[in-house]
Image 1 (cartoon, rainbow, N blue to C red):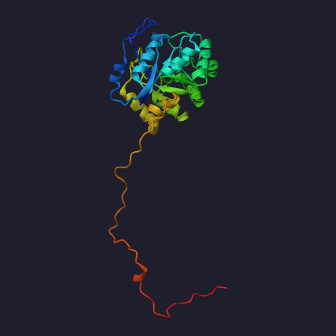
Image 2 (image 1 turned 45 degrees about the vertical axis):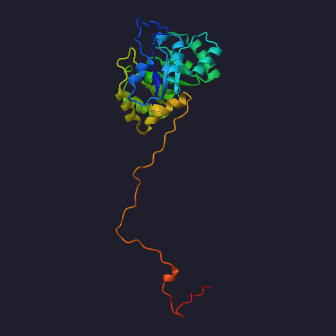
Image 3 (image 1 turned 120 degrees about the vertical axis):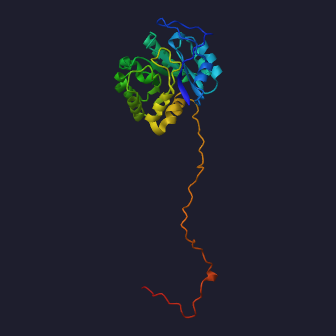
Length: 290
């Protein structure tokens, strides 16, 4: 499984109170304990509003998590090309536009995103109230690659979200405790438009969400996408974050199909020498057809 949306809160690194809120610690060890029943071997660590543009926590988290993990970061507007390249080497693969809880110069963010994509191929991950999604069309049209956090947040944005999916945008099936929408219907419709669009994310620890991630969220996704479950739980995100696609072994059928016994003695082939010989003169000539 690939968890495409995880927040880690390490008290060793700077935290910023946001709208009067300061989250509790949630470390790599806490995350691994919570997800121990699942086979998680990769994911995306996403910076939160309470981490500002600090990259030190991200570098430390990716180093601790190891291969298969990537970062999504809120970058300082003055970040240099050299800093972007260094973060890419550390495992960062995307910029986050947090327009839900943090103000920002959208023009400057867009220019930065275009620069980061040209330098190292980063995409943009957009966290925004769904009702505002349509108003960002001038920005979205300029971005070469985009994903939308938490299903777009509301049914109100679904028609526009489906249009974006049809144009190649990805959508995180995450933060179910944050959204106000018919989740089963939204999952089905997004997946029907583009089976490569949905990417599972736990959104742990679920800071300020109505409820945190529940194991049943995965069951809901599986019920809605059917045989494409592996795509949504792993393959789509791996491809989007430019990671090697996992090759799954093909298991041989432990009970191969056997021939049905008929109860009859099988016909045996006879050698020519066992066939009776006809007496001389018994051969009947074939008629000549002119």
